[in-house]
Image 1 (tube, one colour):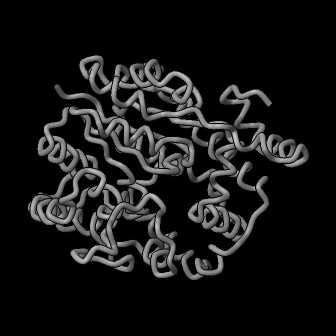
Image 2: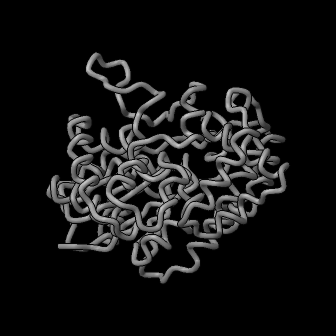
Length: 343
């Protein structure tokens, strides 16, 4: 059985990691977690790479990622065991696909990395989408899976590009009440850094949210990234503090940008997954999720197992003072209305 590519798109901090982990437990689903975002702009910088050029994309840090890692900014979801005596890499030279994606698939992630190097480097020049399709299908065949699903945190930032790269993809949009999402963002240093970079870009006259609507396949965005890097001081940015309402505005702007992109999809290629609904009725929601990917993937044993994973949690934004709740709700209001949350 072969199915269309599946992309999980979201703002991040909304339960998409949990969905990726749940799908990873299905015997026929290859769950690719944090594959594209760690690659940065380089992921889409070459329209038709050779095998060696493709491997460079997968294995070498972009200037932005290198600067972040050198300043001690490591993705919280990182799975590579840097403290292990057998670890070959440090945060300063970790290949992007080894930070999360390959350890998410297997404990033998370094052996898999070496295997993929030989496989990818032997490829001829061909369109970028074909290179990714070949890699993902090779991994699916290796682990005897029928479908691959990619999820990266904050993937709304690259949604237009991913949908241009995979025009036949089905999309799973995972979302959560923006007020709780904003609270989670405020406690995550990557989003603090993102907010600082967005504000700095705006001060330089660059409308980042407008840029998210445009697919970028080619070197232009990578050149822009290199041009902007001297203006960013990640060591200083990661220590910046922002009012909670700024994270609410960030979330709402991401929802506005992402929703405009999702609106271009046919209804049968889009599934909206509400985090709170998965918590309240996991069996119903997860069965709908797997059927959306393909009815042939229905699996009673898998459903019995993974339905035990989601657990209801309290809404933390409700614990804020009344003034803080009102201010945060106002900041999130445009996105909340689009998703149908009560104000």
